[in-house]
Length: 161
Image (cartoon, rainbow, N blue to C red):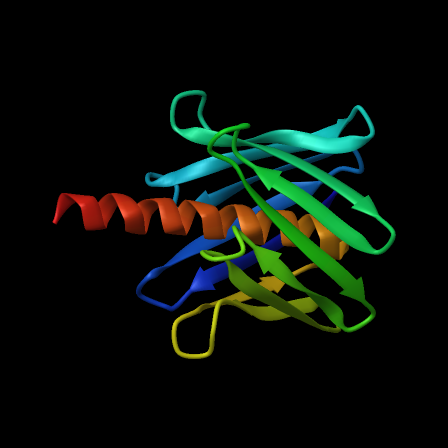
């Protein structure tokens, strides 16, 4: 069993990331023990499939790795968003979301750690993940899932104001 852990965002405003990969299934958590979402993504039908969160408060995940790219869909048919990341030995780069309302994603690999950013230098969120023996595409799935949880929370907070 291989484990990873990290954080999306800053010290005071961010989400913890934890996961374990057993060769068939990634199980983990985004957020804290009391205010977080479980993650379960496993091998199935030629792709990784699973869910972040509960049945009523979460979203589906489907990911394929093909030709050096991670093709990731988070959500359903009508409310889902895609991410496409291209992998290199140095890490991964790509885009999450729609063309007009999406963000660039940069993940830089440094030994057994990934550091990166969602969005621009001034308007983005940092990500840092200690990989252990977990493959980079699995860390990317967890990171993009965490970014979606973050944006959903930000949207919910802005509609309450």
